Image (cartoon, rainbow, N blue to C red):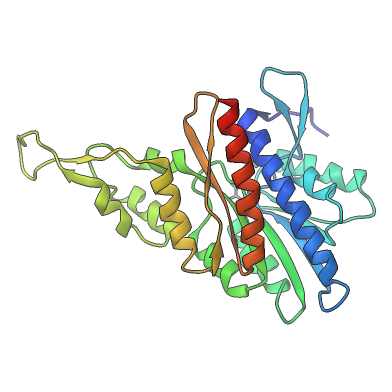
Length: 284
Ligand SMILES: C[S@@+](CC[C@H](N)C(=O)[O-])C[C@H]1O[C@@H](n2cnc3c(N)ncnc32)[C@H](O)[C@@H]1O
């Protein structure tokens, strides 16, 4: 086994994981009750699992990553899927199978879009009377719209999304609407790029050559989060209010929200996020 190359994470990552953990507990409690009647099993699917543990920035302290939080959830998930692209992180995830020998842990190495669509979604069907909670926690624009469509169509999954706002704004140039690869990427992630148009207007500067240059408006984090969560609301009947996760300088990084087929699930998440936002406001 190779020496551990640690992921170092900031305070916002810890806050994100605490919000996830609260929802994991609520979800598992509700699902566990359903097992007394019709439900056969409920799964946790970590599509961007990481390595299981990370180190807190500026501190000699380990933070439990999403896989470990899900493993420690009470009541327990029947089965946990950890999908990860990086071979080195997969090695660390495999250690969790040794730490928790009595649990059903399925580790998959590769791109989560393929693995979700080809393996996970076909297994957790309504017919099989199973349900799953999927956590989508990418660094960048890796979640394909086609994958979200497939998850929604199955009608067996709640999806807890951590949407990378910064990764989107990096693709949106100030003086030119996306074209070529950047346009393709936005369509691949959002399903379309109609919303991009409203961001650009003709610049007041006189053009030197050809077409008048355009200028991009400031992309507000709340607006962008809404664009994506509204897109998702075309697939899922209930979507929570997004909460914007900020870095230590209060710059928006990600938007966290839940998409579900269940109204109560979304109400629970709105309550969890509401409490978090009120506490964050007091702490400022
Ligand atoms: C933000 S980290 C995940 C952290 C983890 N969810 C946690 O809270 O402990 C994103 C992870 O996704 C992995 N990754 C990137 N692209 C991926 C893909 N297409 N499919 C699966 N994993 C991917 C990266 O190697 C990285 O470990």
